[in-house]
Image (cartoon, helix red, strand yellow):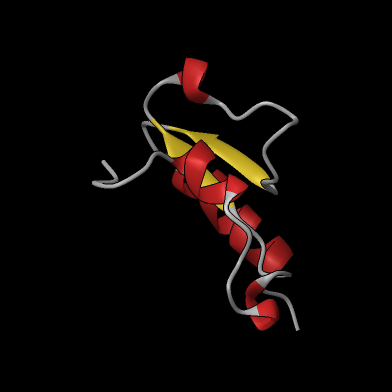
Length: 65
């Protein structure tokens, strides 16, 4: 659990460092109802419990050369 704000609130805050603006965001949540709407900028939503194969495929997609 995030102590100060939830994930949607975090994504609504603009990055204070422009060099961070293009980093892909992967969201994990145990609550499918928490899946961010299109109003929140994320790249991937992964529900818990974690599917390791899906996580590895996501990492391969976003961390390729």
